[in-house]
Image 1: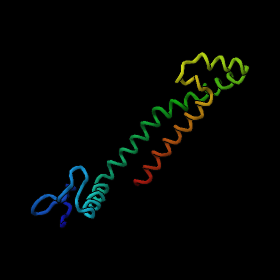
Image 2: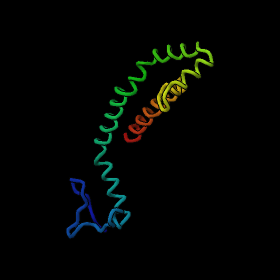
Image 3: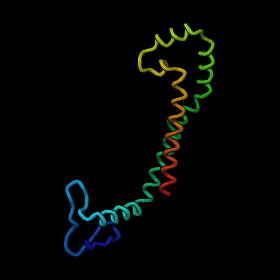
Image 4: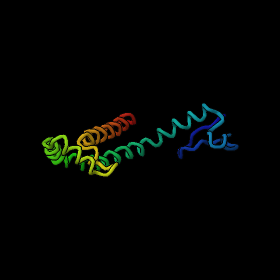
Length: 130
């Protein structure tokens, strides 16, 4: 179909709107590809702003909280290491299922790895957009 983009980002033609399938997009796939490319270019500033906002919120929230308590976690791991194997088992059995302390100390390394992985994914997403 013969459509061009106007300044608002909509496809226009002198007659009617382009034909579409319900919930599936344009019938003309080349027109849909062209429209989606234009939409990404037109929305680039918003996408970058969204990524920067997410990285800042994540860095100032969960990520910062986890790293601020890092020294306390190291201290707790040292104390846990002093316990005998029997005391360690008693400690873990006393904790309710699904709580963080039930899987201590392995849960901390998993948490740190997950936090770092999520932050790296956000940063790579921002780099890919820019």
